[in-house]
Length: 342
Image (cartoon, rainbow, N blue to C red; front, side, top):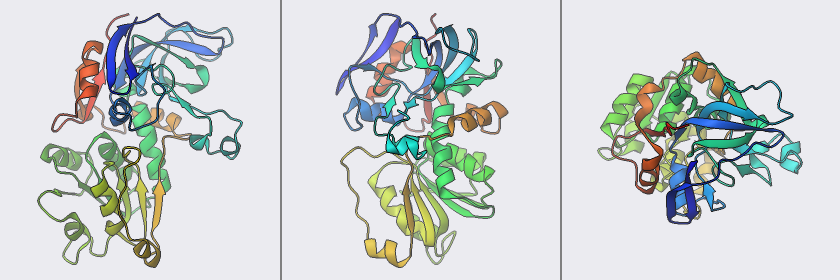
């Protein structure tokens, strides 16, 4: 079969590899669609811990082609989405129910072979059924949506709340929709790209800000801003130093900041601890998707989340290395890799 292999830091290529076979508790899944994530680019550049050589791709959906001897409740022909994050179930974090912090966490598409391939093998425990009639391209959004759900859970958005989302990529645009579903009355998205600002307003943002044209702190939280004094919740979804630093200045006293965006490992930002202390800000990190994948799959299946408008283009496996090796094109939200060969 074909697979997009991270062969070493800085080296990625499409290769012919042996088709895997499922173990007793595994599923063999024929990939229908797999999303390109910013983390894939971080992996290529050594900015996120991985274990090459490995097949990339952790946002996937597909059809079960074979099942292991002990698999129950999932059958050949079922459509499934995969939670890539496999916890050990034994460490102190797992025993405390914080599986995303597992000391032995291993992820499909990062530490073991993933979904930028014709087939992937995954444990049944990581599979979630999807409706037979669901578009495969929608199924590939379950993993990023699950990560956004965790961030929104941590934020504790209440009906009537004011929310700022920093970053207009797929994570930011999914988060805008979740904030709306949570009942936020004010949802402001900040991003430089005009097309993404327009899309955010279609998806539920009540206002948008161009940080390249105005000071976002003044425009949003200043005396003459959209929410003078700051907002209840800030969700940082861009993963860049500027927006991380802005996030704490946009929250009102007693507000909550959730860091959802992934910055390169080792990169640092400046902030004023006295400000965090004096205004009693709650600053949280949101890492992956503990126990949210089923909810994400149900949301996708329900049609409550707009997905088609987030898909910028679909490419075959042959084009995936080039897509991952280059920055996202201006205005691009999500690229899906569709193998298209059984």
